[in-house]
Image 1 (cartoon, rainbow over the protein chains, first blue to last red):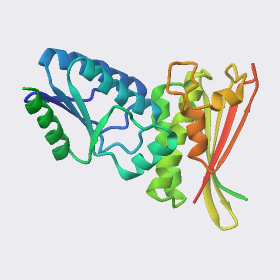
Image 2 (image 1 turned 30 degrees about the horizontal axis):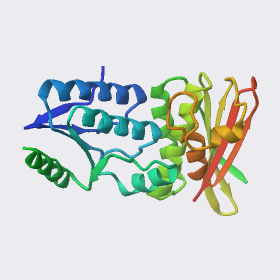
Image 3 (image 1 turned 90 degrees about the vertical axis):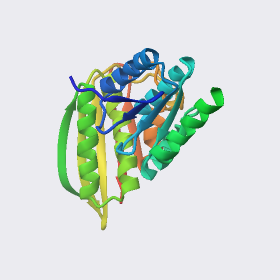
Length: 121
Length: 134
């Protein structure tokens, strides 16, 4: 069964989506992340979507769900690396990813999460 | 109008939706679409293919490469024999969903396409045709 790897990096979880996810895979990632946030007591989740060539409303909803779920579990989510063509398309599709923090790349996404942990401690 | 190539994909599962995305991407590339136009067409196709699976109980996606007066385009036909849509206007409205989704599928696909046509009636299935030109 294919699976998207979730890496633990200090107090954060790092997910790099490198395949064109089918819907079930997206749903299982959502479940898996919830479990890992709790088991690792993660303070933040960084999702790298730089390899994703398409974000449709299903994937968009999954990203929003992950952010909402993480927030409830006291973790911050940052989505990084969205391709320009994907961003243009998402807006035209009508999806604004409200409530999801974004950053241009992994470095600035990590910096955002670090800030949050430092501010909270 | 000249049809350059025509192919049909059966769609029943979420893996089939991935295949639709890949085939539509390749067709858009073959017709010389730039990256943004490719992405718009592939995203629209993904929304409509998911409708075929979720609402239509499966069906087909036809991919047609067309050339017309020097313009190159891709036309896609999504057909199912599901229950059909009783109120098309309502179904096209952003935020309307019968399956707990975001309700952006039909309206979003229309915005991402240059041509959009929907034929449906209760009990008669649904057929959505979209086109995008280079």
